[in-house]
Length: 533
Image (cartoon, rainbow, N blue to C red; front, side, top):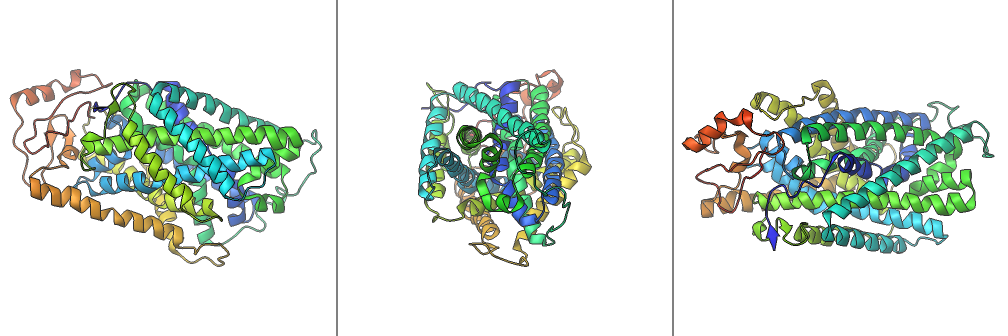
């Protein structure tokens, strides 16, 4: 059934690479969270500061991921970065990341986005959402997207490209309409949102932590491409432009969109509009039909595109986790279907997990809960990965594929904010008027992360002791043909002459794709290191 080639076909060019980041960043975040962020921080001016800060901090993280992505050019992204930066004990951090990403982060995020599509389309149809109606539409969207990804990777990328263009067009329409409305050309009643400055701004640290979580939710997509690096053409050129450029473009559009929203929508209405602030904006600017029907449909399509990008990327991550041995009998699941050339089994597994998060929670403010829940683990591991870029600068100083170097002060800023949004949610807020306890979302994230220790021990410690198969040796490849000290502190045996020759000829190898196998004595025969680095 499966073709286990590590990288798969090189389907992703510069346009699709940029679209994978932009399409996920411009998803539900900018349309569903500005009102929630405003409610938390108290003033539009402070909300705008957080959106600007989110762009700068995300760019600092993006540069670290570019450096790491060029060093390790296989599908799997952050999982591989963590494994090489922190190989001991037995690639624990990489395993926990893969566990969280596959079991809760991506399925929860997709499940959160699905009903947002439904809410906008129900709003356009004039139908009152009962909670389950939006979920029903979300279920249909997730099903269609999974089927499309199974049938064709190329056509999935083409759909992502088209929907990315739609997203940018929708945001540009909102930005231009807001600017025109502010001049008085459109008959929209003026409000005093921006004249108040920072008046009414909250001083609660917990509120800022929750607000930053939602801001970073909107910027999260800049990492999406790294899970499909094995399919990226010319990574040394395309990766920096796609990841760095997508953060810069999206950051500018986000800030201008927030300015437009609050030029038009009064403060009290904005706060109470929750996930449909953009629909409220379009209704006031363009009138009933265009504002309440046409643009909400396109906004729903924008979120639909984000689900497409999430589904494409996470299936490649699960495939990589199977390939390196994290999943029992993973070799039976990983790889592309021989005829379809898509990771069918991985897509089906992710679909099933997503439906659990979509259908299991009770009606209510589930969106807030899911966003905060999946974001806690996300930014914990993103911070560790960015720190890993600094660590690897010293542990692998001569890596031949490090063709890009990130700026450490920006990396450190990113790490600091990751620490902030993972620690502060546990501090009691001044007021707690939420439907759920303030600590529930981060606590669920922590519990899910710690729960990964059980399968990690069974798979990476107990199983190797029983069988003599070392499933973590692949992560100790520090350079072409170099292996770090093993778990007991002893060096691996010297490589054979053929491997020494590969090492000597490293400079002549193509930086597009490096393909070799390491004859490591304790490496399971089922784990093939091909196209590594």
